[in-house]
Amino acid sequence: MNVRAVPCLSDNYAYVLVQDGHAVVVDPSEAAPVLAALEGLTLDAIWLTHHHWDHVGGIEALLARGAVPVVGSRHDLAEQRIHGQTVAVGQGDTVRFGALEGRVHDIPGHTLGAIAYEIGGALFTGDTLFAGGCGRVFEGTMPTMRASIDRLAALDPALRVWCGHEYTVKNLEFAQALAPEPAVAARLDAARALRARGEPTVGHPLADERATNPFVRWGAPAVQAAAARLGADPTDPDAVFGALRAAKDRW
Image (cartoon, rainbow, N blue to C red; front, side, top):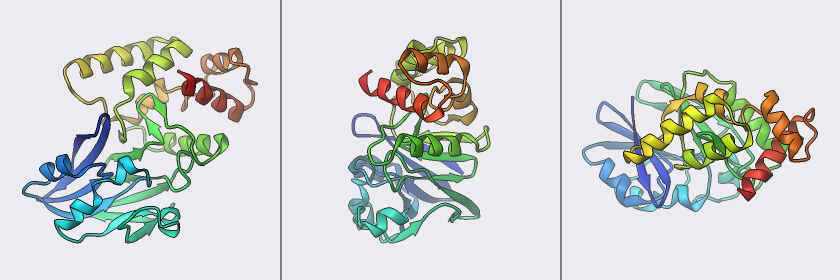
């Protein structure tokens, strides 16, 4: 399976999964660039990580190309939040693409219906886990979001992470200001170099998040010390995570 990152809007990514002339699209935020990436391919399905407009805006135009299953979370289908959704999935469910079988993970916090897809060595995290950071907590609670990040971080470290936005440089600048460490500085330099060449920073190993992402590393001494400087109890995981997210909201 090949994954094509498709830049959309100002900083979004949609993804086109390609295998033997067939495709699945993840989070088509707008139609035109995704349709261009689908040229010559047969679209099998649309998979959605959550209901926000900048992840679902291209669905109608893609369906005009031909009806396919539109997969999203059980919560979003029950709440009728995604126009055109036809399939509901959640924790423990599977999705298929050709001969590949993937797993669905419930990751509420950014939204209550946020889900991730793990398939073929790839992990599509939407706006929950970003490269070097995490999404804002719009509908869940800080403990809920922390649990979702922990669930993703516990997966195979070799998985390649494909997230919803190109926020990597800003996220790592925050991480470096929060708790300067050589691994963070090196990843920030690498991300800046990629962006300078016009290349995406996504598709990186999950292991990178374990090494450099403060929202994954909330238990690391340097991150806990930073949370303490922000006024949080460093022995309380949810207080640490909440302090980090509040600080990032103000960044």
